[in-house]
View 1 (cartoon, helix red, strand yellow):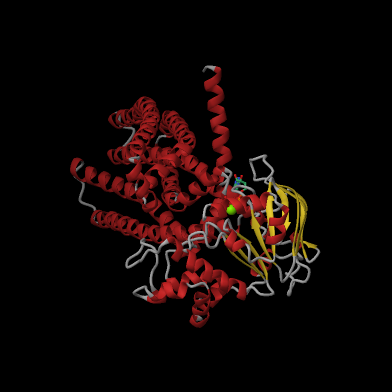
View 2 (cartoon, helix red, strand yellow):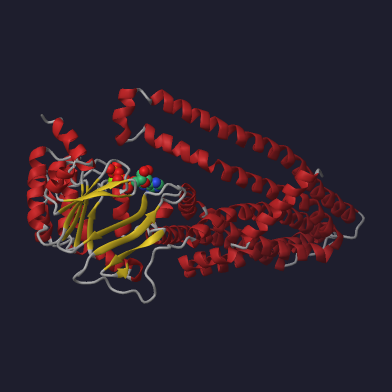
Length: 608
Ligand SMILES: Nc1ncnc2c1ncn2[C@@H]1O[C@H](COP(=O)(O)OP(=O)(O)OP(=O)(O)O)[C@@H](O)[C@H]1O
Ligand SMILES: [Mg+2]
């Protein structure tokens, strides 16, 4: 063997064995998904495993009895018909057991899918925002999702393998009883087939693994090529050919790789199955020889021929199943890896409850922050205070870190240096969930939930889902009430076009609905990140009129590019290069004649 192949070979085996080490935790997940069906399925399989040997033994006796009756003219033994009835009973039991096993398997499949999907969702909800922005995590999550449904067949195969193993052991005992050498020859001939099968299964896995990024691209292209969001631009920019070309190019590449592996597998497979067939037929010839020479009865010959045939099909299928399980359990590694990702941002064991009321506000003290995998400092020794009963407007050009600041206040991320305090205590000391309860934030890229209008507001404080008066009050404050009044089903109107009878809204209408979420929440800090970007001039004016009234004496942080909005804040903070460039009231900043007044003049000039 050349050195490289040799290393691949052993490296492959090591990795496969390592993957099998995942089996215990996987079995725990499997077991937790439905212990009762699992026990039932296994018990039925154990009984079913004994049937082949039982049937062969009975038929051996039947044949020997018949031969004795016909050739030696003995009288017909009365027990013969009873034996036939017994064999029939075994056959019938086998059929019934197979059905019952199928029934258990289908129950198990449903329970397992449900259990794993729920666990994946629960776990995903606990993870840090940062992991979602990591592409390799996305691969992992994607693969973990697929495992929920794709691995069922593998688990059922493991059950079948167990059954076949028991069958093989019992049949082998039978063969060994009549012809010990035969057993050895057959085993030797089948071993190369097993090694070959699992080797290729492993190659298939690693190919699949390497293709994951390409498959992600394919998925993206496919979604892009047929989605509501992209349809407008695709048509107008005639991007379809570009997408189709890319798609075919990528899928051809994947196809070529798969074909080349399949070819190699085919060549090796042909050779190996010839080898195992010769083992089987060699054994068969040996049995015939011994029967002719008189050392075995005809009944024993049929028994051995049947047992060898059954054992070798079972062994082959065990080998194939085993290698596919080893291969598939590598996929389960992804599921376990996914479960092993732990959130970094979480409450300490004896975390403090968030202060009620907040007395001295938030303070950023020389905070530095950059996103994972990107060395650029978004916030660079940034110091900032947000007092209770103060409304601060945050402005700055695109990419200066305004949204990032919100992510830090809400502890979606932690600073890499410096500290953030709330009432003089580091944010990390507080209970994360309780901190979140104090904040109502509407992000720039807020979600448009394809649910009813009422639910779209209720997500702001999901406990109030059934308190219609409160939902309506919040909707009135954000001007969403008027939008909803025009919908056919009012608050029960399904929004978005994904589901039946759904109605889509305009950008500004969606924004009013999203704003209502913030008003629904009884929070101490209100954060609006570009809340009015899509609103028309009149709506914007009204929204801010109300916002000013409603946040009177409250802590609020407002991010906007519109100076008309910004002016109503108590204090304006201008962000540049990760620091505060200027701050103060509108008139103060104008009188400074710096960045603010420059940006203001630019915007004002365009209206003149
Ligand atoms: N998830 C992310 N991963 C990596 N870098 C990011 C991420 N989000 C933002 N950035 C980078 O951080 C910088 C600040 O982004 P941020 O979203 O805070 O800007 P912003 O001030 O809110 O801009 P805008 O006015 O466009 O909303 C940008 O340069 C951006 O490229
Ligand atoms: Mg932003």
